[in-house]
Image (cartoon, rainbow, N blue to C red; front, side, top):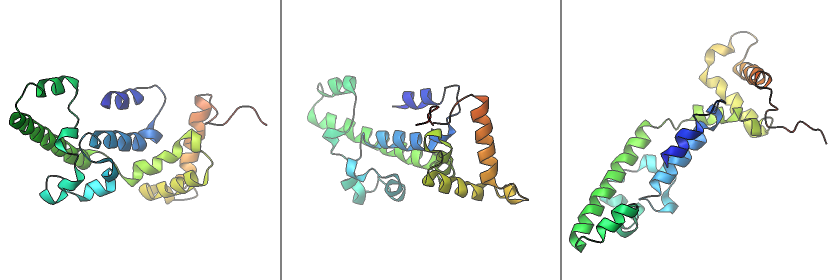
Length: 174
């Protein structure tokens, strides 16, 4: 689960524009190991304390909590009571790890706005709106004629030229 996340960002090309989406997807994959799929919305999970009994309806039944192949084999050798105890401890470990993720992962508007730098979405209205939103994170760029959006566009174009790429657009014209 985390290996693909790490490998994606060990590439030579900058991947900051993919960071938000990858963090969200990795978190969703993790939560799917113990939370019902219909409840895996990060905004909703941030607001909920999954360790509270009133939120137990959000969790998968113990029999469906992801354990892994080797652990599953070991669980078959245990009595029903011991198996339940192990699964409860596992579920609690998942909950605590999930709470830590939510607390520590940088899931916020800044990284979401940086998604606008993705060469694939360059020029789309959503990307332009997100780039405009970036100026709120760098107020010093409001001084003089150089706004944050202009600076980001300049930096982005400079990166495209330096790396001799097309920014997600086809090199041939129709």
